[in-house]
Image 1 (cartoon, one colour):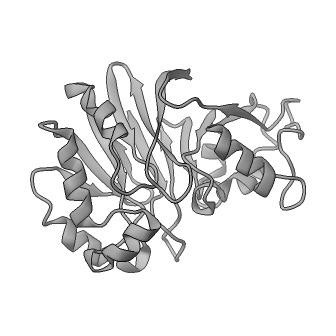
Image 2 (cartoon, rainbow, N blue to C red):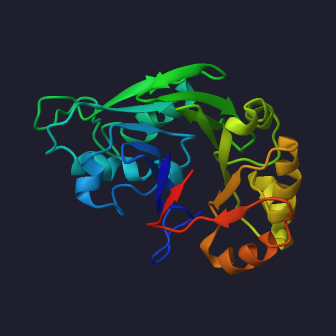
Length: 256
């Protein structure tokens, strides 16, 4: 699988954008940036969207993306998330007041721009060419990570979280079929207290977390770093031994 980084930071700054990733050119994972940092032709190729939770930095691209693809003649784009996440988007974002409800607006092909699809927790669901399982993680609101499989290979997308257990237990069951972990990281070690309160990782806590994978050594890709701490977090991640850790960069494509 190939992952293109549209945005990979925990905030907006010039050339730094919120989280959004495109898997194999057609599947968007989180929507913090899509409408603002992606070529229009690439946007029109998106066929499905997975949302981890409804914090603004993971959904704020949805309204602008919807406007950008109204002229598309493609099928409706389904937005997948737990009931909690979908209800939040419908109630607080695309509610007809803050922004139009694009499940009621048709594109130039006569299809609704969006539809909402409720993801169950802890069950494999067939979504396009993938097997996808949503698993609750440990954040300030109800948040899930995803395990995504295709062709016998699997990746983990952590969503926003601090120390958690179930997603790592499920990942460990995959054995060598687990190829990559895309994991959040927000602050340097000096802000461990803030990270704990806001339910995010620092390099030291991530190191302890990765040990829950046992002897497995998938590629580790880090995202969601607050832009002002990027250099410091990168330096501190070098102290995490035993794993192939890379910090994601915008506009790059990675084999995952």
